[in-house]
Length: 196
Image (cartoon, rainbow, N blue to C red; front, side, top):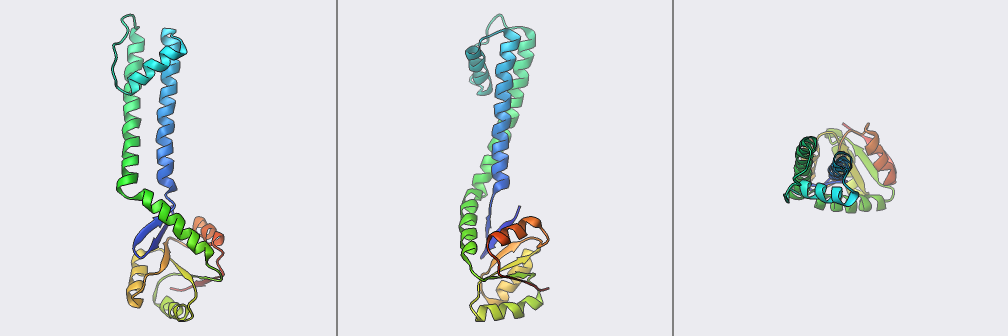
């Protein structure tokens, strides 16, 4: 995953978290589907009864269990309960992390930031935020050219920002990463300047 930064605010696409949320919803749906099919097969119930019993089992509402339920169905129900709870708790933790860590905000800010970067014309990419980049950056700042810094270490970028007493658009990552190059190409990069 690529993380985009602006003035110390994490800005990134957040697709990893969205994939986790979708994955947990998929797992819960699969368990629900298995529950419905299992009750239809094991107890020869119709679809609506199987759907209803699966829903009350997974939601832990706990209506009365039918008296004539077979022992194998009881074991199946136990498996459905523990599987459902496991993936429900996993999904809840993913959603909680998503909200608590501010990832929702970061997704929208990241999209906004990438839209801004994509509107840059004839801008530069500075690869590396080392000593050599200071000279190149000072020329770009003086000429009022747009630029984005890519460096593997955020502390290098922070040190450069402190040196210039400015906040820069930057991406923490390896320029060899295909995803970073893809994002740069989408943004219409004019020149890539390698520095160390």
